[in-house]
Structures are given as C-alpha cells and as structure tokens.
Amino acid sequence: MSASPLTPLDYIAEGYWQDFLAGRPIAGGIAYETELRACTLDESLESLQRIDTLLSQVRRDMIKSGIWDEVTLLVDERYRNFMVFLAFYAGRVLAQQWQSKPHWYGQFELRKRYPELTLITDDFYQHMAVGYDDSGVKEYLFFALEPIGLRLFGHIDRQFDAVQGGQVESGLYQAVSLRLPTTLSNDVHSVPELTADKVTTNKATIHKVITHQVTDSGNPSADSNTHVGTSQLNAPLNKPEEVSIGAEHNLANVVVTDSESRAAPSGVPDTVTTELQTSVVPPESENSIKPELTKVTKPTVKPASPVKNTSTPEMFTQLLVELDEIAVPQPTGDVQYQQARKVLDQFEQHIAKQNKPRRQVIFSDGHIAAKNKALLLLQAAAEDGNTAAMLRLAMYELLGEGLTADSDNQKKSGVEWVNQAASKNDSRAQRLLSKMYYQGVGVSQDIDSGKYWLEQAADNGHAEAANLVQQWQQAQVLLTTQKQEQHSTKRYQLLIGAIIAVALLIIIII
Image (cartoon, rainbow, N blue to C red):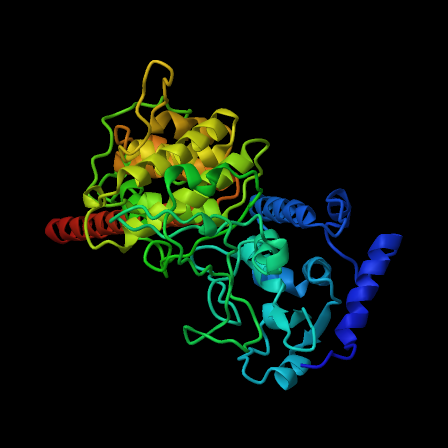
C-alpha cells in the first residue's frame, strides 16, 4: 500500500499539538488543559499511563458532581476537543514507536480507503482513525477514540464494540502497548497455555513475543489492516524456575481475554437484583420504610468460615473484570502485581474452560509451584500497599486457594485484605465488600453493612454501585408514594364510611 497523502485531519492533529506546546488556545477550547499539562506529555509510553490515570479521575469527578452523561458531554465542544486531542496524542506516540508518521483519516477517507470497514456515521468514536507503519506494504489502523470513550463512560450497560472486532482496550496505554512493533516488545513475554497433563520445558518460549493478528469473522487474515487486542497464546507452560514472572518489566494493562470467563453480562447481574430485593423493604413493613438511603456507621468486619464453593462465584469473576477495566492509581507494587497477574490469568482461563467444578481441576506440581510464586509476588505487592494485589490475593484466600501460613508467613485472611483495600478508598474493594455482606460470603450476612459499602463505592466513582444506589433511591421513592396512596385510599374509605353512617343516622331520625 503506497504512502498516504496528507489529509485534513493530519493538519488538524499537527495544529492541536503545536498549539498545545506553544500554550496557545485550541479553537473552541479544551477541557482539563491544566491537568493535561501536569501529565508531562513527552511522547513516551509512560505518559499514556499518566493520561489513563487522569481519565479515571475525570470519570470519578464527573460521577460525584452529577454531570456524568455521555450524550450531554459529547455536545460540549470543550470535552470533544479534550478527547480528540488525546486521540491525536496517542496516535503520535504509537507512530513514533513504529518510527513512522501518523496518518489520520476521517470517515470519508476510511470508507474510500478501507471499504470493508462497517462504520456508523453518527458514532463519535468511529469518527477517525490513525494509520501507522505505512511501510509501502501494509498499514495498520487504530481507532484511538474507542479506549478513551471506554475509560470515561464504559460500564455494565454501556458496552463499547471495536470497529475492527474484538474488545476495546481499557485505556490508551494498553491500547498502544498491544500495537507495538515486535522489535520493541521483547520485554513482553507470552503467557503460556496451561495443560493439566504435564509440564513441558521450552526455554525458547519464555521470551516469545505476543503477536496480535487481525481477525475477520474470527479467522486470522494476513493482509488485513488492523490489530486486534487479543493475544494468541500457544506456548506450553515452562518449568516453574523458567516462568517469566521474575522478569522486571512493566506491563501495566495487558488483558488476557477469555470469552468464557470474562464476558460482561448484557444487563444487571443476578446478584444486583438480589441486593435490591434485600435492600428494598416490602410495602407491608410500613414502619421500616426509609425514603432515602441511610448512612450507617462503618461496620466492624465479622469474619466467618472460609468460602467452600464448587465453582468460581460470580462476584470473583466480576472482580477480575473490574481489576482490568477500572483504573485505580497504585503508588507501589505495580510491577510485582503485573508479573503475578500474568501467570494467574492463565490459571483462571484454564479453570474457566473446564466443564467441571473449580476444585476438581487438577494441576501438576510444577503448575502449583508456578502459582505459588505468583501468589508470593502478589503478597509482596499487597504488603507494599497495592490494592489491586490485595484484592487478587483476597480472592484466592476466600476460595481456599491461597498460600499456606507458616512461622515465617503469618498471612492475613481474605476478608482482612478486602477490608484493607476498601479502607484505602478503592471502589472495587468497596463494591466487593458490599457483595460479601449482602450474600454472607466470608462474613456474616449484614444488609446494613452491605448498604454502607455500596454507598462508599458509589461515592468513589464505581459506576455500577452508583447505578444501584440510584435504583435503590428510586425504589424507595416509589414505595413511599405507594404508601402515601395506600394511606390516602384508607382515609377516603373512612370518610365515605362516615358520610354513609351520618346519612343513615339522619334517615333514622327523620
């Protein structure tokens, strides 16, 4: 494919960048310009991590202030410019990694140049794409607005489907990292596929680069025009001493996708319905109806017996999704967490693919040793204050699959790890703790405590929790209205009865 001539968007992208560098105002204005400058946009991959953190903070602030409305914000030119600027910047970073110039295409150019793409005219996130690695042979495309939109507005009822198929990556760092040229990805090790039969020694696979092939209707295509953010994992598991969890790399957002274990539900999950049913008091119990979600004092954690499950509970599969999709800045332990997660994700995928209860899945001694190494890394990261590591470690403790305590390793319980992460205002931990209290998992069932932690998660920007709190309040309003109507009906009936009684008395007297 020949090199592309400059497009109108190329001039606009360059203009945005030069105006930003010179401190000149961008036409129409740009939201969060001060915060963007604080991100130190030095065209490095690390700067994309800082941008992702900013996007997560923007999302939380919008939820707290009550302006978290995608349609309304997309009408605001300042917010549109903010997202478009970030897309331009991400494309600039990506093209630089490929040692090429970015070429930006609007929908008109995309339809002409790539007629196989199915584009929706009024979809803001399909408005433009950047082409990179234009080497005269082929050109890859990146719809950079998609991960920005997912980071800002994605939630359980607002799914983002990628133009090119597959899942939209959660954030710009992850999206760009998955599209790096192989020569720059040598520090990204492939996650070997688990087999429960034996451990195969294969040192050559330790540093195998994850390659991302374009798919069309699920089949690889050698001459397609884009990358899909799903890794093709084919290497067998190495011996425990060869597992690449010890390498010092900073893979902050690699997501290993498994349709069986990570598919997001299309609507409100069953556990959400259960929580609403247990939280909303029936009309018959008139004395206990409260018009608003009442604040309760912080509860004391009451540990119960460990979870004895026969399969992976939904709350934990949802937790793994949230650990990928909801960004919470971690001051320490991120490298250790990512190394451990890379190995443990593989175990979870293998378990999800088995048509049997979780506890019946058998692993070799080598696999178990590799998992224990990853758990030790998680524990180290958790002890350093990494809340994501705390939650992942808590999951295995609650499932009865954690590390064995000894004289040198006085481990915390899963409940203690969740509570510690929740006390650090990690909305994912607070949401998990609310589920545990609602369902009595690991703790004694306590509806008030569940409601308290649900509120805390909502206050800290957890979209699903905020939606539940809103639904709960709406339900309370409906119940209050129903109660008032019932009282009005009773008063009306009493009044009619009194009028009839007076009329009968008058008739008798007359």
